[in-house]
Image 1 (cartoon, helix red, strand yellow):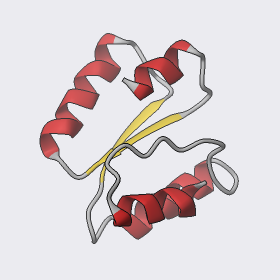
Image 2 (image 1 turned 180 degrees about the vertical axis):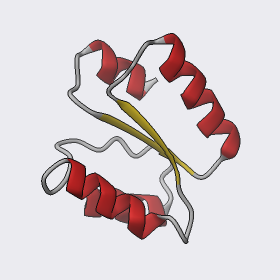
Image 3 (image 1 turned 90 degrees about the vertical axis):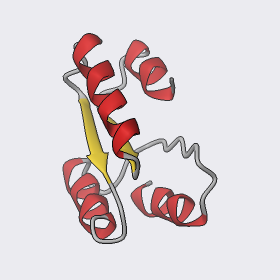
Length: 84
């Protein structure tokens, strides 16, 4: 829902990150139906986390302007802080 709102408000770039394959599949379906070309869907986990953070910082010249972290998990919160 947060991604849909960001897309509706014309965010320049949106990253959807999740550990759940089911959530990733749902995000991919939404991206396709919303014709959201500015949305990147990424599956994370212990092995992928550092690469995702580096990719986002590289693609955004240092980090994103806003992070909406919805899980409340310690690892996800810390990742959000490193991306911002």
